Image 1: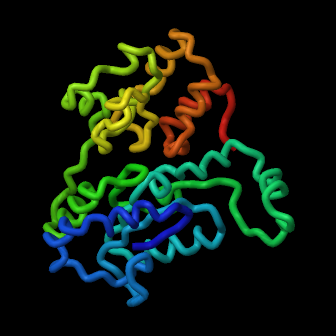
Image 2: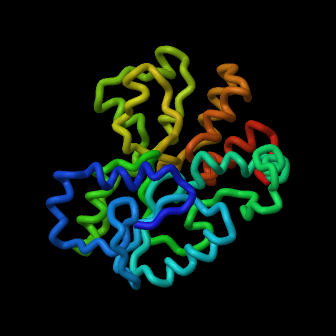
Length: 253
């Protein structure tokens, strides 16, 4: 388990598994997991779970070395799969941010963007979410042990709303919701509490972002509301990025 720019939430999801880990604990030998143990063994590793986005030159070099040492590389969480909330800086003036935050920015070594792991090295499997579902994580590990493809959802949040019996918040209340274009995994929590989905699991398979954006613009949902909705935890996901650029009328730097 390796970390880049992130909040550690996805690593904690693994520690939160507790009883679920018993099913696979006997088949897994943890060689590197600083969040849980100071015991470290050098690679190569059969499986590397990578949390966090690439934000510094050092990160970039390190992830390339990890890829060389990992037989199977799994990215976990929105930061690793789509740049994370920190990818909002991709649309900002990096140098201005540096001057505002740091008294001596000349000592800071950082990239002007926050990018997913797959933008730099081949990734074998992506596990979405902010944070990830611990049940999905156990499924991925169990699948790797068994030598099969992990079974994780690719459908949209809307299907889970139907399963829960949740009335559509967009249709019933006019609340902008990314459920139709967001991958399931959270069990549709937000709509169940009368709040629109804000895309924490990233784009669903074949997400029709343009159609949803057109619909909301026809409903007079303004740019000041749509852009922050699309530029959230998965702002740098290509589908969400393209849709937000279209709404804002500009491109990411």
